[in-house]
Image 1 (cartoon, rainbow, N blue to C red):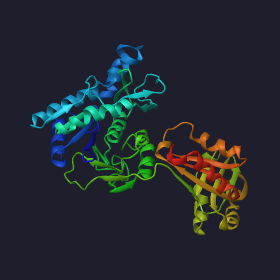
Image 2: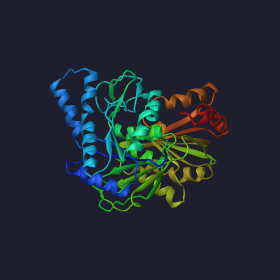
Image 3: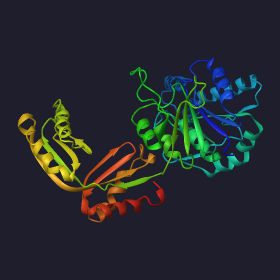
Image 4: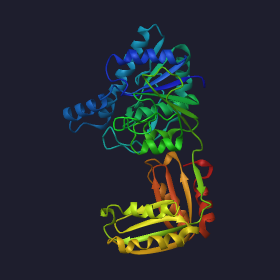
Length: 412
């Protein structure tokens, strides 16, 4: 059933009761049936439920808390079913107490009781069975099937939630279980934007990006999609972000997914120039001075690290000596810089995966086997989806083979 339209409706779109009819009309106009909707709660509803529970029951138990804070999604699903039926469409909301409920997980560790915490879980085989036995037939019989996001059940049938932004996770899980190639996110913006439109008025929608770029955008704070949800994508090939207010089917942003994990050794040999000093983060203009000097000579900075007492600048090995010479005068110009060192012939391997986002233990999985082979890691940097490992260039091939062995078959 790859022709199913999996559509996730964001809570910011459902900002008032009248929005339900507006959203339903847009969906019927834009998409052919069959349609499977995953809905968030109305805007602000989950925060209201969390606050209400804690005020009413300061020491409330975990299971009642989980049942209560997902009520917003249930309300939204019921309202959407009623709305579509009012439009003479065959619609069905699949609610957690119904036999057709599709999402069952095993929670690896019980959270501390906040609705916004991260949930570490595995999907149960029962989900596959439920989808095949109940959800697929329901979708065939109806124009629209609505599933409340955020909510799941465990193997014993008790209600759990997926943490803040869990409706995005629900959409990915349902899409994977149904075997679709694309899911659509309905938002209150035109797509993935070049900047925050509330701050930069000339922000524009980006028509196409790849999943790696989306992972960085999402994990750096942009409210496009819950970055943790991207960890649960396996076979879905595309994701579309559309504005609820747009009538143009070609508008929005299309996100394409590639490899689950990429291991990329650099062919470039690097040198690292390290300024050692004091109070470096409190020294205004220090990065500007360094970059201006290097830019005048056409030298690119490939990576940079700052701590309280050092700045490490990675440049190509071929221009290292010249770079050292033109940067050395900064020792006299900037009082907080004391020493400039140079280390040559450094190699870099980048390990990239959406599954690295907010994932504990990835660094250890990389560094431990490398250390066991007596390879010294010069530096390791992490930025959202990327882990960059710097080693002696002579050790780069060995280090790359070891890392490939750790993530063999693309399994993270």
